[in-house]
Amino acid sequence: MNTDEYEARSGGEHTLSSSGQNGSDPGVSFGGENVGNGGITADKPVFTLSVAADILGLHPRTLRIYEEHDLVVPARTATKRRRYSQNDIRKFQFIQHLTHDLGVNLAGVDIILEMMDELSKHGLDYSEALLRKQPKDI
Image (spheres, rainbow, N blue to C red):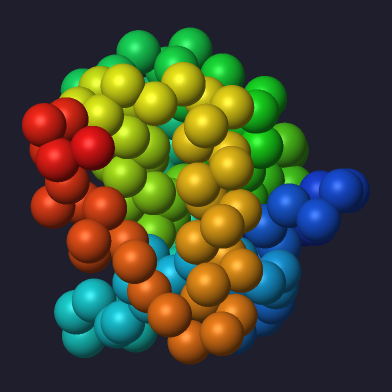
């Protein structure tokens, strides 16, 4: 599928330009480097809901719940099907770390992601530090 087949969703969700880059400002960076010779970037949404759920070892409903809370908003195809990028997968993994390993609820995850977005606007990145945190460290 080429990137021109993706269309915008209302409300500031992910959209794609013809270059394959995310059209919205994702805030916190979860990667973005080129992956392989095909020019596929970590921002290009290529995974369906079921494939993303399989990769993450989660039920597809969990991914939809995260979307309902605006924690991860997938790109949509012209037929309104969800597509997730490698950055989305990394963000899901980070959310899983916060919820499962650190015991943060979804409201807390939302606040943490917003704070990380603000910090990244000022050139600070604490995602690696949070990934190293364990429940005993808090």
